[in-house]
Amino acid sequence: MFVIGAILVGCINALARLNEKIREMQERIDGIAGEGRPRSISMLLAAGLLLNSCSLLIGEAVPPYVRHIVQTLAVILMFGGLFETWRGQKKL
Image (cartoon, rainbow, N blue to C red; front, side, top):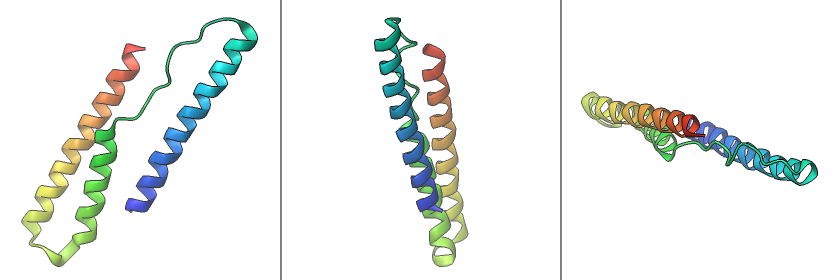
């Protein structure tokens, strides 16, 4: 699960960098300034995904209440990351 999340976050960040390069090249050709910097994904979202994958990996090795606490923290981090990402896109 962690590997899939890490690959997904890496692909999205690479796509954002690629879009920035395309925008810069388009500005050079047209001479018209673009919309600004690319949208980036919050690190809180990545941390939440990592924490959630860790809680799934520990499984039955710890008491259920510990796993529930870790998953709750992961969900809070993911919501914070989604909000931060959304807020960053609204500023542009």
